Length: 124
Image (cartoon, rainbow, N blue to C red; front, side):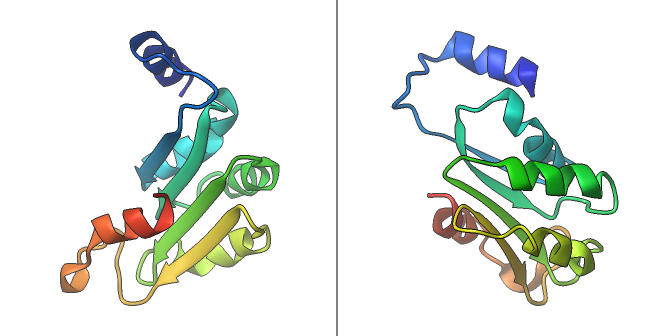
């Protein structure tokens, strides 16, 4: 995440007014959550199906410490981590949300689910 931050900062003119949003799925969602401290310029996170059976305590701690605009966790109810989402729900507040989408798997591939619509309604 720190390397990503360096690349973005060297390629783009990042100012205080710049809005940067991050979306990650599965391991990418975990890395985004854990790495938000390294890149405070990211104001909103959409974290889809992070594997909660790995680094559960660290993910919850990062959620507790998040001070940006929005960190949204989204799980499909059929994802293996959905049953652990309650641990993140303990840390919900105005800028931290946890949602479980019924009938969706790890890849959100059921019933022609519109992932773009989820992105638009969550972080945009």
